[in-house]
Structures are given as structure tokens and as C-alpha cells.
Length: 310
Length: 243
Image (cartoon, rainbow over all chains, first blue to last red; front, side):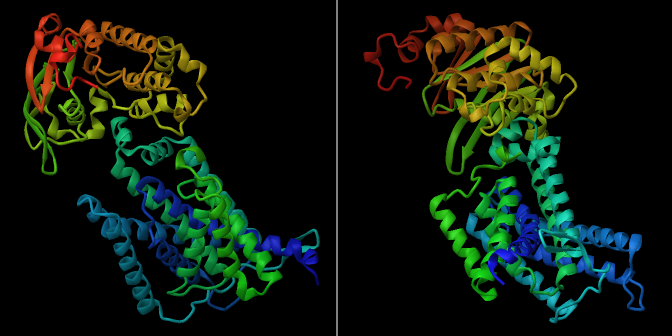
């Protein structure tokens, strides 16, 4: 079968993975916006959220191994998402409190944040490895995964539909939050000019904390979606984390809509590239695209600051 | 007294910027701070708005120590700061910038927007344009308008005329006088001493982080040192006049 025959199937798969990248990428871009800091431990927020959602959903499953259906499935997915989001939010909050705030209080140089992030990341990975084991942890099916409908001859599965719909809902919700609420106003003001934001009465510390929490909620919920599709493991954060970071840079770090666009594009490029060449070349292709785009547009596709995105 | 500074010392690391400044601003006054670059004028304003903390001395706002108030709560206590270089939010529209001025209290937003557009009709024409794309004069109008959105009792203005065409400077100074007629006190930092002293009631001259002269505006206008150093009369006698 040629590429054109597979085009729509590859597009659907690419958008599904890409929407997950986008959800995680928002955490990088939001924190970068308010602190000009790459939170390299964000991938572990994703991992911890993934485990949180997985354990809660698994505990609620009927023990007989049967696959739930109907409202029960909807409820399980919703609770899993909620639990993942809460765990992600708590992890991000703790990370900010333990790894970054003490440095901010001391006006530490940039490099210190990077080292602190790597340390926190290693700690979280190894703690998870010790507590949850070093094998993949599976999440049993929460619903029957069949083909919902066909799009130009390609199968759209329940799973890809759920992931895509939830991810898009989160992206739209975040976009509205940043563009249309008082909190979003504060986030944008801090991102554009923190000193002047203070003069306007914005409590910058509070905005920073809330920004970490929002990024953590998204990454945690994204982690649950990931576990639903694949599985969870202590080391699962790294690759999606780097990809999401790539997506954020691709779209223009600090720009909310850029992160969304970057995520979806990266997912598509990977999906097409993996088919055209070889599945194992996926990552190579993804990063080649990144390098190429950054050579043409160093600030990323929508490269400017957070404010305009909203 | 609305604002009182007593022996305020401020340092950036090892560099001392203010060496014991004392000054006051009463309700409804316009007070100007004159001085060359590096004299400590901007530092004084940034200290009053809590962005810098003094290492000694005392600042009282309505008789209450400023050190007890977090910087971001000052706007809620009636202090608005129009910073040096205007500092409009570059990616926000004119309207969004003005709304930032009402971040803490949105009860009078509609009314106050109308008032600002009345003072600066130019801003209404540019309502949807990004702050970063405005001309210098428009940005200054926006920065002042934004500061008024919180209905301040004291406005700190840092070099509102910097880099602006004479026509625009005139508009800005007219608006400052008009704001003041509504009872708002203004602490005005200016390089353009002639314009500043024309609308101010009193003034202080800063040199190297100290107040070297304090007098009524008329008194300062008549002072030989002020005339030489800040009004550009007999420039030959001055080593380094204001930029």
C-alpha cells in the first residue's frame, strides 16, 4: 500500500499523538512565559500524573477482568483524567516549591535552575521506579475500543477519538483561560513585563504558582490519556517530554497557540515520516524538522511572547 | 501627609543609589524631582512603589510604614506608577493595557475607560492596536491612562517627556495638570525641568543620591544653580548638564 492510501490513517494517528504532545507542551511554554525558565522536570509531572490516573482508574475497575461499557466507561475515563490532573498539579506544585522557589528567593543564576530541574527529574524517576516497579504498568481497557466511524476510508477508533476530543477540549479551555479571564490577564502581564505587572497589582508569586499548577493539571491528564493508549512506566516521561518540549520550541516557546500548533505538527510529521521511511526513523525525522524550521525561523512558527497568543 | 520619606537609603548590591533621601508629598500636590542621570530619581520612585526596598530609613504612606505593604498591594492603596520608558505591555492591545490598570478593582472600568479616552482621544482611535506598535507619544499616553484606571490618589511619573516631540510633551503636561486639578497628587521626575517647574508646586533637586535643594517651584526657578544646571542657562558653566 502506498502513502496516499494510508494518508488519512496516518493523519488520524498523527493528530492523536500530536494532541498529547500539545497538551504537555503547554506546561513548558506557560512556565517559560512567566519565568523564562525551561522546566525540564515537567516530563516527570506527566509521568506522575499518568500513574495517579492509572492507579485510581484501576482500583475502580471491576475485578473480573470484564471490559466496562456505557456510562461506566465514561465515568472511569473522567475519574482517571481527574485523578491524573490532580496528581500532575500536585507534582508541579511540589516541584515549584522544592526545586525552584528557594532559588528564586536567592536570585540564583539560570544554570542553577537547570541543575535543580535535572536533580528533581532524577529523583522523581527513581522514586517512581522504586515504588511502582521498573516494568511497564498496564491499564486494563476502560471501554471497548472499536471503530467508531470511517473517515476517507480510515478507521477512527474509540480510543483516538477520546484522546483527541479530550486533548482539544483542554487546549481550547486553556486558550480561553489565558485570553479571557483575569487570571489569564495576570499570566500574560507577568510574561510580558513582570515588574510592570507588579505595578498593576499583580501578585507575581501567585501567578507563578498557578501557572505551574495549570501546566501540571494538563500534563497529568495527558499522562492518563497516554497510559490509556500505551502503558505507564517510571521512565515514560523522557521521550514524550522531549517531544513536547520540541513542539513548544517549534511553535515558539512562550506562545500558547504555538505550542498547540507545534504539538499537532510534530505528531503529523512523525506519523508520515515513520511510514515513508521506517518506524525507527520517527524521532530522527521529528528532530530534523525542528532543526530545519529553527534555521528558517529561529523564534519558532508563532515565535513571540505569550501575550499575543491569547 | 500622603507620602513621607525619611533618610531613605537604597543600594543595588554594593552600589549605593540613595544616600538618605527625605521628602514629602501632600494630598493634591505636584512635586517634582530634578537631577542629572544617575542622581537617584528613578530609584526613588521605584522604592516608593515597593519594587526596591530601602536598606534603612522610613517611608510612610498615609502615616503607615510602606514596608508592611507588598509591592503589588500598593495600587490598591492609591499609588500608581508610570514607569520610566512607559513599559506598556507590548503584545496587549490598547484596551487590554488599560484594563491591566484596573486589574485590582473592576467596579468602575467602563466609566474610567471613557474618562481616559476623553483625556487622550488618540487612544480610542488605536483601541485594538498592540501596545508595542504605538508611537512613543501614544505609548506615554497609554501608560498614563493605564495608571489612572486604578483611580489613584498619588501618581508617580517617571520622565513622561523623554524622547517625545514638543507638541506631544505639551499635551502630556496639560493632562498631568488636569489630573492634578481632580485632586490627584503627582510626584514627577523630569529632565525637562522648565516644563516640570511650570506645573509643580514644589520641587527637590537630587545629586548623587542626596537632596541638595528643596524649595517651591518659583524658588527653584529663581535659583542660580537650578538655572545653570537644569534650565540650560549659561551652559558653559556646567560640566555635564542633563542629557
